[in-house]
Image (cartoon, rainbow, N blue to C red; front, top):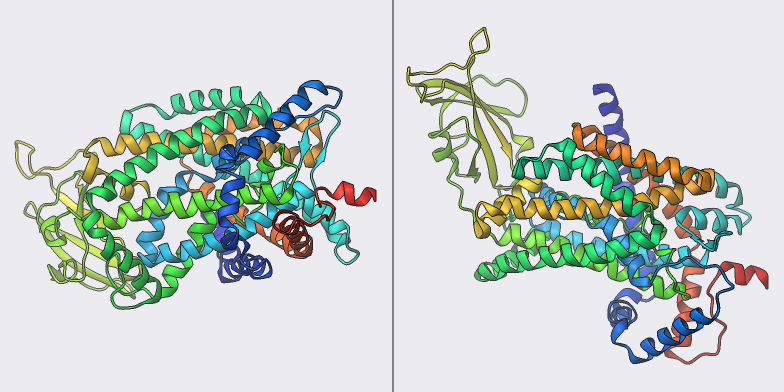
Length: 585
């Protein structure tokens, strides 16, 4: 396992290294510049055609006429979902524990400046997601049952096959992408999410992981059995519910800490460019940490560049590829600029109520406590110097309950998070019995101290506890449960579509059965390795996807210009709706 972890770590370092992040930014920047900042220039139009389409009288009339036509024409087989349901299915997979735990970790390591670079990745990612879904709708096809079959592997295969220079790569790259998608579905989309939900319920409600796994897997199986229509219907209820729940809680905290917001915002920009002190904790890390972790968190969260959302959007009843691309613009905006930012704002605006490091070291118990880590907190200055055990190490000897223990910290591992956990480790005799300093067993003999930076869901829970007290953990556990379950539903469809591409429709039932079983397994075992490997697989998916998207960028821009010309300049050009229509000519 150690060898596997080492190999995966090296691959992940390459996959999610500077070249990959640069490629993702380049792709978004390429479409942004070539489209003349379409996502910003037409942002209002995107909102009007997507989330606010229900308030458009003309749209309602067209929808009513379309509904009447479908009621009278039954001869054509069709199986699609509404544009909103398709977007909810895509959001269900992207809105996950990463919006809470991932952002917390990004701030802990990258500082407040990471938020700004997360926004940059989102703005560029809007156009990457737009391009992916324009291609997804343009190259999708209906099978014999009238079901839309789409996804990144479809435009990788069909799109690259149209050009002589890329035709030899069409089949192998599409197969590689589909295979990686199946692996990611089992890992990040199933086992890891079930594990996060099970852990949250176990810690906060005492529910056994096996119970959580069986119940959630059973619910997922019931939804999956209904196909994309049922998944879309359920996620259309879960996504607004869990998003509203989280938004209200976050806004409550921000309103309570309104006086801190100006300094919070200035800290974000100072940290992003290195102006003045770096916000968020102890200084020492370069601005590149903020850039690296901010961009990485944005990409991890909204998945723009991975091509996964195309698998949900392809089932939409939309006709215009550009319109479904606009749904992706909103999706990336909502996931990263809204939801991720709320988590970041809560963490940065919440006041630190933890004691200083010196206070914590003088009152160590076997229970986990919190303390604030600052440059002058006394963590290194207090205590008696001990021998240095390695390069970059600094040790201090302290006394707790009359016994001495050694505290050693690696300076390179200290993060921007100024909240640390500290817990005393009680000594045991040769038989394994706990040792005490008094007969009443009120003073444990502390042999060592465990100190670690607080990040992930734990850091978010600490911030929420300032306003919601002991209920913060339970509230976040409920949020994690909804986020995780919705992600499982979204990825069940993604993996199923990839399996169909690889093995045909006969693969659907075996895939779904394995998906349910692996979900139960994931809830019950330790999954740090699965998280790490899943991150690597997700990154590998981006390579064939971004290659195809850039190769087909001319088609994306052509479809976009065609749509803008007809919509804003009343052009009589023929709509570019489907590759099949173009090929039939």
